[in-house]
Image (cartoon, rainbow, N blue to C red):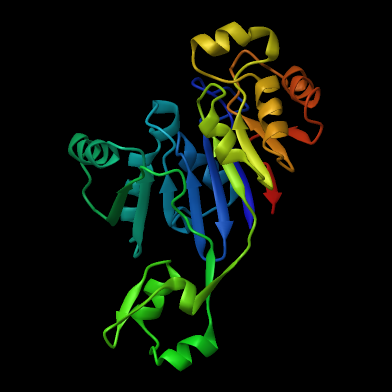
Amino acid sequence: MQLTFLGTSAMVPTKERNHSAVLISYGSEGILIDCGEGTQRQMKIAGIKPSKVTKILISHWHGDHVLGIPGLIQTLAKNEYDRVLEIYGPEGTKERMKNMFKAFSFEDKIETKIYEITKKRFFEGNRRIRVDAVRKLGIPDGPLLGKLQSGKSITFKEKKITPEQATYVVKGKKLSFIADTVPCNNALELAMNSDILVCESTYAHKLEEKAAEYLHMTAKQAGLLANQAKTKKLILTHFSQRYKTMEEIEDDAKDVFSNTICAYDFMKIKV
């Protein structure tokens, strides 16, 4: 698995930092976390084909996190994208996407599936089939096994079969992404026991009042969160344009959580 940071700025991009976007590459999956303005260009510079993207996860609908979506979809259509692009976002995403398709003239279209997420976790663990159990139950290859593998119960020969009976979960790596928030219990819950926590860090500690006013975190608050959550590694991102270098931000976080680095555009991290 690899993370590629395509944009690490906050609301206003700079010469060095684009709007928010991170690509998770894992096997055939290309999971794009947010898609700020200019993300397509960043992908070209990084040598990533737009068709690599299979899913877009929208953290929230601030412009600096989503303004690149229309252009990316247009490019995929022009390049005869032959997959179903899955788009996940908070409540209201279906209506916003519907309005987006109304607002722009898309000459070519791609197939999309849009999901509104109301629970904290929506990608379940990596389930594997229990071959002996499946043979004993007589379940054939096909959609039924697929449902079990996705964590859903099935009915076969008038009997209910649960995922626990026919599959097992392989423990993987935990990546957490926290965007545009003040410290809160949900952030702590999401970050708990992460192998990597990617967290917004818009301001340095001395601007804590400003961070609270604009509902953002400071670097020190991100470090404290990582500490409380027993995170293994903290990667800071979403920096205010006021910071030309990251020393102050990184030092603030390292005061309370030593295994911290600041992301930069085109940084790649292998997990």
